[in-house]
Length: 370
Image (tube, rainbow, N blue to C red; front, top):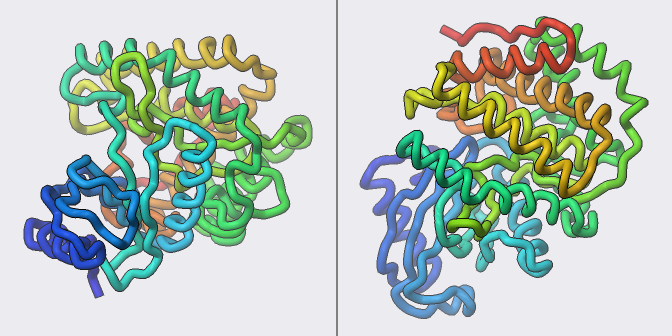
């Protein structure tokens, strides 16, 4: 049965508002959609009166309702809530979580309620000048917040229930393995190549797997694995909240930084038009990538050979995700069906070129399904 969250539309939003108010046992002063991601739907709301459900939820303040959909929604929701509670206790800039409900009965999907961080995403899409200005103001804080994460104790990210690559299911949700994060990422890529099938990635995968022993040994630290400008909320020069911790894990910081570098260099959108594979978008991507790597290196020096290898792994992992989404559908890698809309030809082309350069081997994924 389709949940109210999945149904969409004004009537669905009203139904979710009513059901949330009932769950909280208190009226809402505001309720509206805020965003729709690859695996979650997000709403903004205000509580008009005190609730006994979670005594520390403030009234009159802007709050966020994050509903989890897609494969393994319960595991992802539980993992992210634990991560955010731990990070908030450690003083890391992430929105404070107030409540987590794993049961689907209330809203038709697991959900979390958290504070709404002040400001907006580091990457603003309203206009090219605004994107440039916002990124320029918050960029130093963006890099600093990531290196701060990498200095926290590894135990900040809970063991077990990690939402990072797991070779047993290939969808990004499952129990944490004793294998290193690098080994799990490579195993997930290999499993996807076989299951897709994705023969156009096999040569690059075999090369990276052969080189892996040189880069397997690395200290474990907390890693985000989806750290990019739309997941970092800023207000001027300050990071007010890092969001979307579904993939958070313990592992090699080189791989986390390499994942950020790959996203900065290859992300494209149909809208706005200037974020496509065109002169404006390519200039912005080159600028972001050129600033990020030396800035991270200045704050937390890396072994650059290790980092370049991890760039190849990050690119191939991301490309294998897109390949599976095209070959088997977004559900095959744990995403909502609507997520296929993000796998546009421009981003596949940019990521393919990037991955081929980093691997030194040609790569290709299947065309979109008819």
